[in-house]
Image (cartoon, rainbow, N blue to C red; front, top):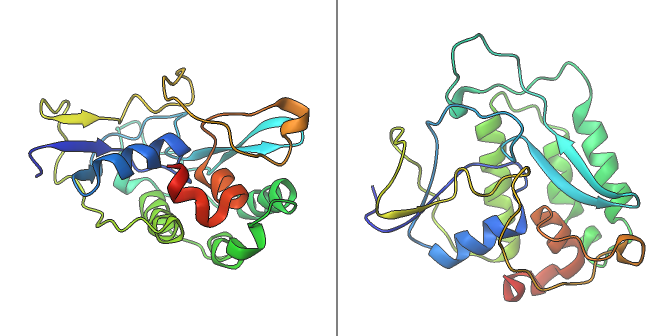
Length: 203
């Protein structure tokens, strides 16, 4: 276990703040693998910019038993075609962005394959996103659950869709900004599709 640095949760297409922190603490960060799965967080949802403002994409998970499920054991539900919905939403929202077509083939694969576990799915998306951002990082994982870490910056609860983030963010161009202005801390795909190779400099 690292002695200094940060512990980050595993999110679905995490917000910009997540990658700013990961990049800041790289290589001294670990990803939480053993926490109980908390509902209504970025672990299975992402916010993107639609013509109507913020649109939340949710990955449905299999309803677990009453027992708390470790995040690594949460299974994705395929009871309805959420992959088709997410991919159509991403296309609809970002087709006009400067860099969507550069990255679309690599993201499209994730809306065709059926991964069993949410953690594995998010992990593979994280690895892809780090590659596209050109962040050289080795992803390490926690080996057990710790309620708190005295020596690490802990982002497991602080980066949260229901909490106002203190993250300071400079505006960048967004496709629908003439309608709703700059929306901060959206999913990293918003930054990637709009800024492309400049994304790493932005972070």
